[in-house]
Image (cartoon, rainbow, N blue to C red; front, side, top):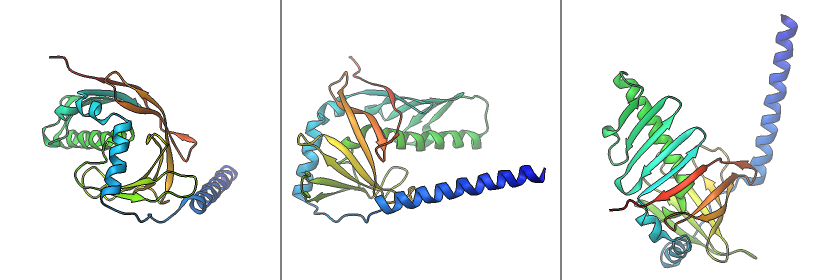
Length: 239
C-alpha cells in the first residue's frame, strides 16, 4: 500500500511540475499589460466598420439564435430577451431582463434554493457562451469603452473594448484584430478569470447565416485549444 501511495505521489509531483512549467512558458510568451489607446471618433469609426463588415443590421433584426456548446443547448429569443437552455436533465427558461422571473422546467418539484442554483448556472453559462458567439456585435453595448490602438508594422489598427459594467465579469477587456475587410481574426483577453493577461483567441470560418448575419464558426484559444460550438442557426419570426 505504501508503494502504491509513493507511486501516486510521484505521479502527482510530476504532473504539478509539468503544469507549472507550462504555465511559466505561457506566462512568459503571452502575459502583457493592457495596451493604451485613444477614445473618441477613431475608435467609434473602427467599431462601425467591424459591425458593417459583419452585417450588424441583420444581427439586430435576427429574432432567434440557436447553438450548442459543451453539452449546453441554447435557443435564444434575442429580441424578446428570453433563452431556453438545456443541459443534462435540466431545462431552464432564462429571462435576461429579470432573472427572478426565470423558470425551471426540469427537474420539477425542487426547492427554491436548488431552483436559484440552476438559474445562476444557466445565467453564467449563457453570458459566457453567447459572448463567444456574438462578441463582435457588443461593441456599442451600454457600459462599453472603445479605444483605438494604432497599427504596428504589417498590422491593421485594432480596437480595445472594455466592459465597464454588465455581464458576469465586468471590467474585462478584449483587443480585437481585424483583416483588411475589417472582419475580426482574433482578440487578446485581459479577463479576471485568467491569471495570464493578453492570451489570444482566434475567430475564423466566418459564415453568413440564414438571416444574413456573419458569425464565426471556429474559435481557438492560444491558436490551438478549440472552443467547440456547433449547430449555429439564426431565424426571423414570420408575422
